Length: 493
Length: 115
Image 1 (cartoon, rainbow over the protein chains, first blue to last red):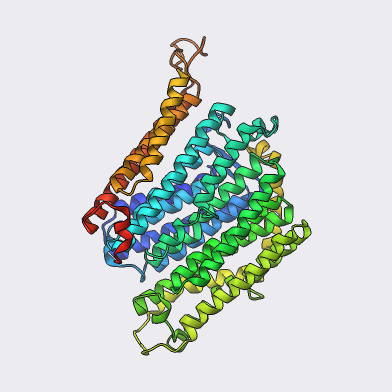
Image 2: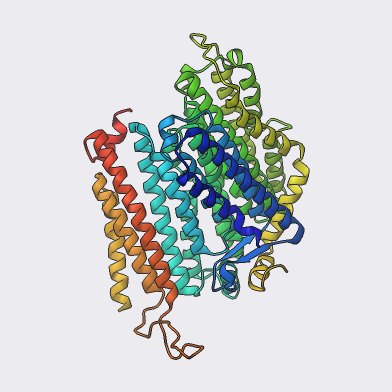
């Protein structure tokens, strides 16, 4: 049996079991957690196999490559799968304490599993139309998760989220129709061979820009990111944390996959455009973060800003730059998920996350504050945490590629992030609050946060082996022929 | 035939985007529906139109003979229709919820009053 189906099949199976199981909160939680653990185990297996044997390929139903649907795992996809599993565990664990009973009884756990299935499918698929289907699986479950609540603010946010994402999907689907009309295939490896034999004419350029825009909306890149800060701060932490950690990263992954495989010979103007867009995303995101006075809104803008870091590699297209971007993406998944979970704890303790109502967390809850230090400081880029390593690698890669201005912007945005995180730390942890409150906090709430903080520490300590991994992943991406051969010439090379 | 379908699909896109720029929720949803139908038509047209046979191998033979229609765009359109239908149904329910909550179907009414 091929491993590659497992990270998709396990969440699907878990979701079905959750649908059929009696709606008792305890039972649903444990089934969900068991499903996430099993999915992570399968993702780790895929990762180990990918590292040992190179790119793994599964031809679904035994149909050979350009005709059937192919599942492919290269190093990048395998790393992101493992990250998906870990975030899944953290989210299902955080649902033990951090969720309102109403939401939990209306199918939360099943929907999270469907979401995880969509994310894994998007990382694994080797077919563009199949990618569209996984996007929709992911989106529909995220729509329901987001709109499952009753307050006006949440519904309004859900509406913006739904509309913008549907426009992006339509654009993606339009591009797929034109792609099939012009190239006669939607298998990514097959498309890569078709496009290798062609110049980048107007047709290819239009397609590239349509895909760029569609994925750009999903990845929340400048100037298409406005839906994200308008919606991500409203749902409870057990929902928004998984959105923040994974959904935008799927958009970035799709960008990296499509543009390294299909359009590796895009004109230099395109790469300049990607770099400029990354710079604008970083600057605008962080300036937005500095204007906000709410813990979760600050996080939303920081999320947008830091997505810029993850596309710099695509703009430079050098081995080290791509590796640095992937390293940053990997680290950011855990850090931002953790920060949203921490925001959820504040929400439960103080009923709000706006800065005037926060403060004194360090005095009242020293353990929680000590754990929060790790993701906050890592996002800020304080050495020796993972954020610092990622930024250092990016700065070195941009300077090495001669993109001085881009490296300068990374450094400047690093300072802005530092300011934004320092202010967040000051306002919510240090500042004395108006009235001391001693509402008890259960230690169970801290387990997922401690787990994710441990992952961040691990990435910081094992930075070199992980960076080596992203270097080999970027070698795979920069030689699309490896991917094409693995898919079209039947399984392992 | 391609020209007619291309114009139709373009008109659907234009109408869809126009409706989505309006302030009313109902129009927004109709706009989304038109947009997804325009896309389906586009996939169908781009996948080359033909009056040829259905792509089914006759009994007793092992290969197709003569010109036949490409089944892939049809499969794509079918999938896209199903997904579009589901999403549209969800958007309608969401709009219903908004209407029940704010008593209006003006998009700005959602954000004006804080919940």
